[in-house]
Amino acid sequence: MTAKPSANKLWGGRFQQRTDRRVEIFTASIPYDWRLYRHDIAGSIAHCRMLGQCRIISAKDADSIVAGLEEIRDEMDREIREGRFVPDPSLEDIHTTIEQRLLEKIGPAAGKLHTARSRNDQIALDLRLYLRDEIDQIVSLLRGFQKALVGRARETSDAVMPGYTHLQRAQPVVVAHHFLAYYDMAERDRRRLKDCRTRVNVLPLGAGALAGSSFPLDREMVARSLGFEAVSSNSLDSVSDRDFVVEFLSAAATIMVHLSRLGEELVLWSSSEFGFVELPESFCTGSSIMPQKRNPDVPELVRGKAGRVFGALMALLTILKGLPLSYNRDLQEDKEPLFEAVDTVKGCLEIMTPAVAGLRIDAARLLQAARQGFLTATEVADYLVRKGLPFREAHQIVGKAVAEAARRNVELGALGLATLRSFSPAFEEDVLAVLEVHNSVASKNLPGGTAPARVRERIAQIEEEWRREED
Ligand code: ARG
Image (cartoon, rainbow, N blue to C red; front, side, top):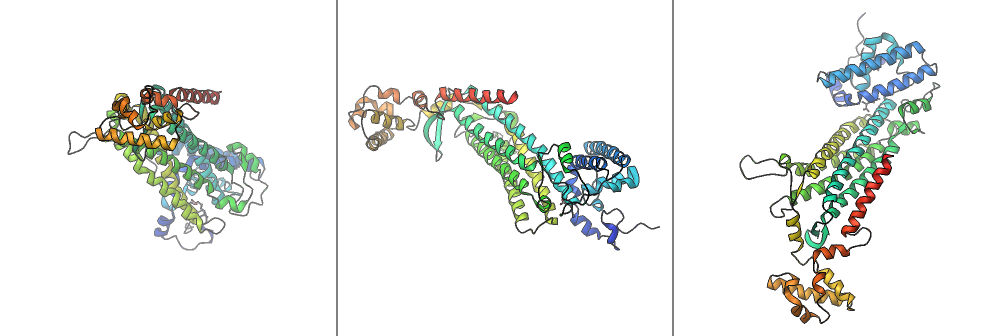
């Protein structure tokens, strides 16, 4: 007997002709979806145990399928680790690849695994299992990144630097406050991911191709064994929904926005124009032509890689927007952008964490910068308000004093009390303390303000939250 033209296809039955090789290559997802092998196998094992339990297949077949799948998982672990795994496009996707191996291992019983299942609900399952794992990893990478930020904040709650608006020196802040701003961003990022996880963590299996299954499946059992919090409530939606990918990518894009902003600041701050920080030498690269160069390639690349993740989000939205229900092959295009986004976010967090931890902070230079450029002018206006002047008038007076100081090329304090009094008799000896940057930051003592005492309180609060999370 000659082999059927599509003998190793899961759907060869109704076909007379062999699939065109070009079509095989064009439609194959195995070159990238092999990554899902562990999740595919875990899903198959749970499905198979349930089929056995519900007496849809025999206990004997179920046992032999599970044993075969476990062997395949260990085999593939080894092949991938040793770089020996070669995807075969005639085996289309990860589901076919594994089923083919199972057939070679245990014979015809392998054909019972796909009872009451379609690749449509199977791939939805794989993707959810995969993404759930990756979310957990990214959440913990974010925590590591936050620890690095808080570590730096602990050392810098008294160090004063210029705070900026419009990239112009605005008011003094403490350096720790700046690090903790990124902490809060990362905290929202973590919570977004955790929230997204609840919608990822729903079992689609049992939806079949689109309409559900006529077999008496125990979906709750499968959900429990795979750690899902719920089973999906509509089979059409289950095979066509990729909202959870969009949500993840949107959260991932936001993480990249934050990392990219920090990257931008590290690039600026490590320039000789700023000279606020130095990246560890092991995190810099040189120039092939300019011997003096010490380039911040790491934060630059983080900034540059953000585009990949935004692109992935745009790709998913575009793939989904015109799709009629339910499954369409277009959905296969969800994987590469998702994988790339996951790899990018993880890679960037993994490199930014040690970059932040290893940063050399030039506190003297930061302080010097905070003392130049009239950063306490607002303080002086507030001082006049406390002496009874309307804020608008105070603003005018200090503006004039600043203009005079700028003309003389000195800071406000150097004008001296007599000159200040020529702008307003309300100025007294005590204005000089108001001009001091440490007094300025200490006075920002509301919740959320940059006063060192507040910042230390915030650090203590964060540490307390971490302790509570641990137990
Ligand atoms: N490789 C496919 C995907 O990623 C798996 C599902 C295939 N289903 C199908 N009916 N061809 O979406």
